[in-house]
Each structure stands twice: as C-alpha cells, then as structure tokens.
Amino acid sequence: MLVKALVEQYLDAGDNDLKYMVLRQDFTICEPVQDVDLLVKKVLLPVLLEETDPEIVELVSSQVYPQLALKCIEKTREMGSVQELGWFDDLIVEPLFERIDCKRTSFIVQTIRNVLRVVVGGGNNVASSAERYMKKLIAQMKGKNGERGNAVLYWDTLDLMIPVYYDRVPKMSFEVLSDIFDMYEDRSDNISNIALINSIKATTSGAVTKLLEREISDSLLETISSVWWQFHSVADGLFESRLIPSLHAKASESLMLTLQTICNLWPLYQIPSVEHNRPILSDKIMADLQSEITSLLNRAVSDSNKEPLSSIQQELIVEDTEIDDEQQAYLDQLQVDDDLEFDELDDDPSSSADEHNFEQIAEKCSTILKSLHGDSMKPTSQGYLLPSLENVKISALSTKQDIEDVSRTVWTVLDTETTLPTLLLSLEILGQILQSNVAEINCSRTCESLLRHMKQNKSFLQTIKVGSMTQIIDEGSTFRTMVYSTLLQIVTTRSLDHPICCKVLIEAISRGVRDTDTTISQLAIRIIETILQADYETIRGIDPNWYNFTLLPRVAEIATKVSKKLQAHSEARPDRAQHPVDTTEAAIDIVDRLQWLFNRQYPAIA
Image 1 (tube, rainbow, N blue to C red):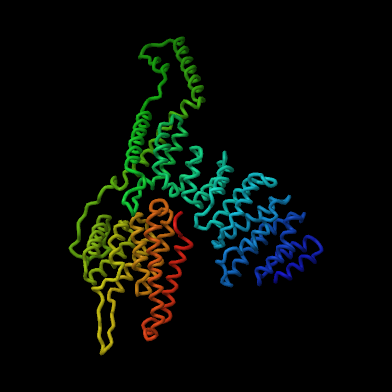
Image 2: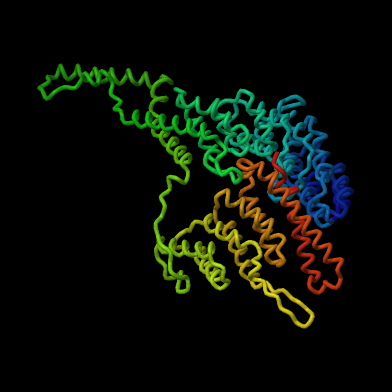
C-alpha cells in the first residue's frame, strides 16, 4: 500500500479497531522525503502525542516507526544515497527529538530506542556527526528538561545511539563523555555499564586522558579499563601514580579491583610494539610492577597456609587424660563462647572479609606475572628438520611432534629456497597442515616465512619474443596466489601476534594491492579488511603513531600510484587488449575499497 493511501484510510477510520488494522498493513516508500513527512506528521506523531488507546500507541512505537526507518534505509540504498549523511536525522530522528520535551517523553524516547534497535540490529550504516541528539537525550536523563522517565529505557537508548552516531570512528566529545560519567555515578547495572564502556570506545584517547584527571573510583576505573587501548598515552603515569601504590591497599575489595584493572590492561605490558619491538610500559614500571605483584603473591600464599586458630583454641589443647562430666561441660561452654566471639568478629568488615581472599589474590597475581613474563615462560619445543618434503603425507602424521617437525621444515624451505617447484610443494603441505586436526602450528611464525613471498619475484619472470613482439610471463603468479590465499586463511581462522599482523598488513598494502594479478590484489584487500577488523583496537592501543605516520601515508602513496597507473593504461588505447575493461574495473574497485577502509572505517587514530 502506498503511504498516501494508508494515511487517507487511517484518517477516515471511524474507530480504534479500524485504525489499528490500517496501521498493521504493509506500506511502500516511493519518495522518502515526501512519504516520511506525510506519514510522520499526519499519523505517527499525533498517535504518540495524543492517542489514548495504548495498543495503537504501542503499535506505532514498536513496529510502524521502526519499519518506516528500515524501509527508508532500503530505499535510499536502492537510490544509491545510503552513505549520504543527514538523511536519517532529518527524516527519522529529528521529528522525534523535537518533541522530546513533551508530556509524553517516555513514549518518544521508547520510539527512538525502538528505531535505533532495528537500525543497529540490521548492521545498517547511517552514521552522522549530529552529536546534538546525544546532548538532548543526556539533558533528559539528567532531568534538566522535563521528567526523567524510566532510567533503564534511557540508558538503553543512549547505548544504542553510540554505534549509530559514532560508527567505528572515535569522535565523542569530552563534554558528552563527561556528562555520561556524571550520570553513571553510583550505578552498577549491566545496561549502564555497557553504555559507559561503549562511550569510552567512541571517544578519543585524549578525552580519556582528560577524564582520568578527575577523581575516579576504583570500581569505575576497573570498568573502563576493559577498553585498554584508550590508555596507551597514560600507561606509565597510571601504573606509577595509582595502580602500583594501590597494591598496598588493606581492604580486600579495593585490592581486588586494582588487580582486575591491571589484568585488563595486560596488553600494555605484554604486546610488543611493531615500531619499538617492546611493550608500551617502560622497563622501570614493568620491573616495579613485577616486584610488587611477586611480593603480594608471596604474602597471599603465605597467609593462605596459616591455620586460623584462635588463642583460646590453642589453650584448650588437652592431652589424653580422663575428663569428668563437669570438666567436659566447662570445656564445651568455652568452645561455644569462642565460636560466638568469632562470629561477632566475622561481622566486622575489617576482619575475615579482608583477610581470607587469598586464593583470588594469588590467582590474579599469577595471571599478571604470566603476562609480564610473556613468551619467555613458554617452553621451546625440540625437534628436527626433515631431509625433504617430497614424501610427506599429512594424513600419516599422528602426533603433535610430527606436525611440528614438518612445519619447521616448511618454514626453512620458505625462508631459504629459491626454486619454484619446491616452494609450491611447501605451500601445498602447509595448506594440508592448516586443515589437519592433529595439532595447531605457530601461525605467526608461518606468516613470517610467507612475508618475503608477498612481492613479485623477478627470477620467476620469463621474457618471450615472438617476431618483434615481447611478452613477459610471470611464472610465479600461481605461487603468489597460493601465498595470499594461505595468509587469508590464517588471518581469518587463527590469532596472530600483533607485530606479525602489522607486517602482513603493510605488505598486503605495499605489494598485494598493486600486484598486476587482480586475483592477488583482491585477496590482498580481503586480508587487509580481516586484519583491521580483528586488530584495529590493538593498533590503537599499541601502535597509534606507526598507524598514523607510517601505514596511512603508505596507503595514500599506493592508492595514488595505482590510480596513476590505471589512468596511463586508459590513455594508451593500443594497450587496451592487455588490460581489458573488467580488469580495469576490478583495479578501480580495489582502490575505492582501500580508500574507504582507511578514510571512513579505520581512520587516523586520535
């Protein structure tokens, strides 16, 4: 049904049952601006603001308005304007926020929440920079402009607004972030915790640094420390001035919060930077942290081994002598009195609640020490190199050691071999190992061996002359395709060390995107997308400078070179046969995807 017809039927309906039935009908969006304006002004807003039938109000709030938003998204996508900023605000959100101060604020906020929920749930990209809506909602939550309404509803709505208005791009202002923290005070429910954490993700590390200048409770710091990558610029100061001194806290709750915060921030003292080949925390801070945690662990283990005997119990050690009934009754009464005394002590928050948490403290300390030691604590597996890979059958390998020996041989071949048949064989065997369920191999080490093969090997290029014509044949193209396919399989299904992720990323940009084989360049862009999706937050926390000042300039350089090359080919018409239209279009698409990734989805780190 067309929107105009639906509006006419609704306005002509004589009773609420007919109105309800009209609103249940499906409708079609033809012209988003005109259709939405008509439906919202004539039907939806009047229902939300004035309708007394609760079923009709609920229908509009939970179904009709959200469906209108989805239909607009679909229509704008068809029209090729889904990425245009502002339409979602102008057509869908603005009319609701204009009425947020009305007497039916809860209905309006509920409708906003329902619209945002279907947008976020469908993975639709309608992001804009309209932070004013966040401010309006926060003003309502703070009770500045009208009734406060249901707190859970407001926090749920706020949490849904964050991915819509800050879609992967950290740009939440300090003003908004500060207001959210002010409202969070003394709250500990799951919805507000999630909104708080997502706010930290949506802002910049500079805003987080400014926020930490305020007095923040241990519990609040523990909550936001789960977004560890936002703490890279204040890591040393935070550990030196607050976290390490807090390890001397006498209160068990405060100590456990500090330990959990340190656990949350583990990448800052374990993951090495690709730029400096060491963790973010300085050597001095890491040494101090290790010393304090070791001391705390020793105290916890020592205290946990002590018998909790009272002085009265120790005095009542009676040897094997005969005790008459009167003596036994006296001893029993002493025991009862003793139990009563310590029952009262247990009610004192300064006693057992702070003294008998040894196991949890020891567990947290052990986890932190393991992260501080990093890979140095992992035993190095022993094995040997196979004389050849020619007779290897993965299906015949039954032990982890067998797989490791073959893997080690494959790495050596990839590191040293120059003959194409041997390299091809090593990749075939590597592919079988990755599909085998016998044992996992070191995929970071595997990728390290594949790095040098991501670029075109000139020794595999053959020049053929036919008369006056010269043609260059790349015999290594198949091998390179296998290399990129293997890398894509690894980054998609396995976890890699951060430095290796960065090295693969920059090689895929520098070599893969500009490869003359479009299959390889397409595999390269998929590798880039996969690594960024998995590792962008780690890059934000460990290597923001490398990303901003090494990787992004390289992206711009490669995009420019490929674009110029495409332009040169398009101008050289005689060369058209060697570069058909579909190949050119594929290359243009790759450049567009590359620029979209780094300009919009994973921009410079603020």
